[in-house]
Image 1: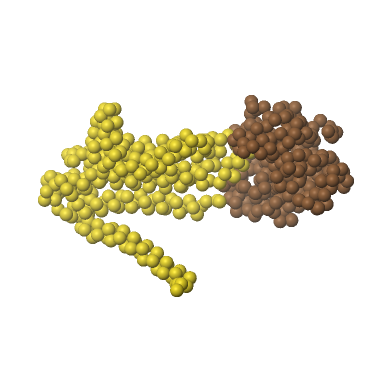
Image 2: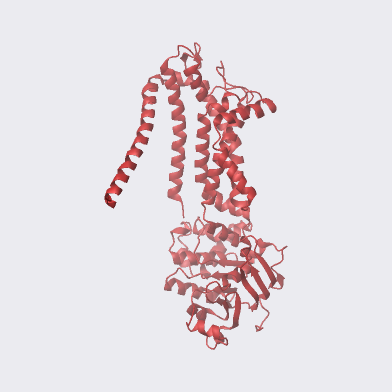
Length: 283
Length: 257
């Protein structure tokens, strides 16, 4: 006996809805759990004081500052390189076995586990180039990890600008660069920014790449130069969750909550930029 | 080969164009496009009209691997030369496309885009170019109070006339139009055709029309293209009334195409 098409349709729809609900539920559960447990720890002192008593008391100020510094440093290195690479791939490179290899390499790079990047950063930046365990080495490692995401999303954003704009600009006597600078880049900017923020968001939350390259267990003061080590939220969370006996659970969830809010805020900014420009878009 | 009266603006001799996939889009074409006249290139799809049009501003070059052979002279300058400054050529030879493509900016910015690319910054010159261009495209009255609105907010007909106006603002010598009215209603089409009739006093106009009727209405000179060959070339008043070639006659009278 055959099941009628409407019944099949209903079953499929119900199944998809259930699975979707399950996914959302899982995410909501995690977020609620962290808020529930972490919120009591949040206070002005927690956000602005140095840790004390073997990190069992006090705040997480140096870890917050460290994560902000690492994120900005990563952006400074990765955004220009990633953007220029994306412009090259989208606007200048012709389709050849060479560029196809580059694209495959980029896609594969974004799938490499972050701990491998950490090891690579240790070998290249910390040891071989002699930067030592430092903010600089960490930023470079995070930048390399972030680059594939930035390049592929930026290239996608550039490609989505209609070809007809380029043809018109060139037919009016525009050089390729003028066309990119005046037409393509401004139109692709929202997409590029979204990709940049999503990439940086990942960098901000990673522990493994900074583990060997510049994250400090505990520092009594804020870093003074890019050759100093720094504390950072994800690594701090790892340390106080696993390495410090007698740690109040509240502080762990408080730290997790701050990291979560930091990343969610970046995500929110990306979403806002995207929807703001989508409404303004002229094609 | 049929000669035109005065010195031609564009001289084409034995031109063939090959695309990288091996197709020969034009075969051994020779013709002369006169100044201050409307030249119509018509025929069924795939005849090579657009390819010829895009040879005059070397836009075919955007397809990598396009090969030209033969000679094309613009005012006696070889425009197929590999050493040619393409940017300078495209300033002299403007183009309007089948689909109106307003750039994603205001009407004013669309009008000044070409001049700004060329480095013009003086406000007075830009303002004059805006007004003159819009006047010539019969758009000034409609647009003068809407210059700072986004160009895509205009109607389709206005957009296409803006595309013509923006080319005119660059003061080119030759204007190429590739089926400029194919997406327009009859009233907008008539406005574009009227503009072409008046601007030909100053410019050389080459158009691929979107119908035989439009070809006949506009042609001072006309060429009938069929599968990469130029079948017939002559003055519009003769070619559409008494075509010499059987294939031209069949196409003009609607027996094929």
